[in-house]
Image 1 (spheres, rainbow over the protein chains, first blue to last red):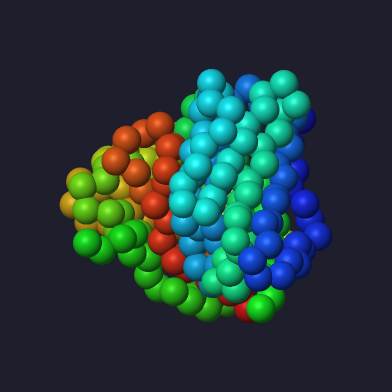
Image 2: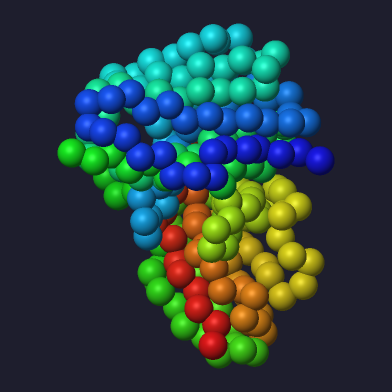
Length: 111
Length: 114
């Protein structure tokens, strides 16, 4: 069956450090993979999309890698800030219209 | 520049009643998606609609649930004869294209069934 797995345990890091979140998937052959941020009581907010032919993508303090051989994406936040505290969701689809989400990893950045 | 607007934010229903959830997409977006999020669960796709058409309802329960996106007005997710298991956060998302890249989500409707 298709699975999208993200670290279920919350990630606690100190302000200024780099946070690294992992997304592993099975039984998908995605053309692209997306990362979203979700704050409590709010809807997800799109952050980055990386395509299968791209190894790495950056946006300000965010960096995403996509390894289709390992079936894994890594999401990095450099120079993390308390405002980065949120749940981060990995999302992908094989084809069609359904975008499938992982359960998310909760990130807490402490001053 | 309003984003996706969902209402109500909170909806309380008793078992057996009907719930109607509304979603106005980003202006100019003609593609709407509905997702459900249960506590400690990920977002689950329910249905994808274009104006006046249901394109993919593979994630929608076969009974009691229906969705529409009329030519004029918001998209509606309708749940008839609600049960306690329907309690969840329901999110609507829109996009300018139908390729589910970069979805814009609303803040959701929290449905509580007593």
